[in-house]
Image (cartoon, rainbow over all chains, first blue to last red; front, side, top):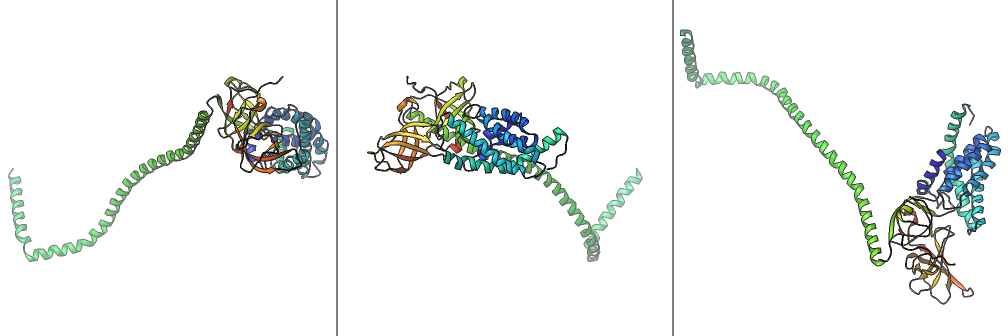
Length: 159
Length: 270
């Protein structure tokens, strides 16, 4: 439910807050945050659900976001839960990496399906700005997800 | 009875005596003396009395002011609502006038008005979601415009909504021609939000400010819709074609309402 709501907000509200034509990917951030908290498998579940919601509101091919978010969930889920206790800055480190991976995977899907992709332009105007913007917004998203996770699990995690 | 008559007689006698004495200077002196003695007391009493009077007036004023305050607050609320409503009405008025102008210029087209629901959730695709679908007569492939110019093409439809691929999307292309010299080419979208017109024959002189419209070739978009304005020309004698960068006619960042042309569908070439 939260993921679908995030997808709606991303489509209707966040475009008005775009920077240089790029908006924060709220659904991706939720997937990343959940993967950091819970690991690969729960992250993949959220990637499928969130990707479905995002693709439903996109003119891109269905499954593009699912694959992109899934790649991010795997990357983050492998390192996240184990390293989370080591540093509270972990989300800030993993978010830009996961964002870059997710956007590149989505662009690759589009290119394979015949869409003209200029990789230098895409990287310069979409991939990198999105990574920066997502990292900033993650400062707000991760504490919320962390709070929800703590209450759901009933276990106090440091950071 | 006799006592009462006697009392009345004494009263008349006293009144007569007073009238006779009052005119005497001595009586006036006493009167003045008494008046001076009583004046401070009267002043002392007059202050609170006037305060009571002013309190009374104040209380009356408060009630009046409260009523007037409520009236003015209601007036302010109404004016505030009008301040919000008037620009909206002006905008709707301008849009309707533009639509009317469009209809007068292009009476052959029928359309459905649609409102923007949102933009594409992905940063890699330029599309919008509108609030009209198959139940309103919208179908895949239909052209979407504003009175100002070309917006894009419907690519996905549900009963109540539709997705429109914008002409600024990198996968979008439109057969076009330059209005002034009729030079033909193809307009593609780009990630930067600008448009690029390619394959312009070298023999045509293209200059900044030239308007580019749909040519109707290929049957995708109807002819005559404004796509954009030339802002930069790239011409090299050794190349087969020249190209031009265009500023879109439509401000895609401020889209609110669009029109879906319902009596024109892309021609399927077999």
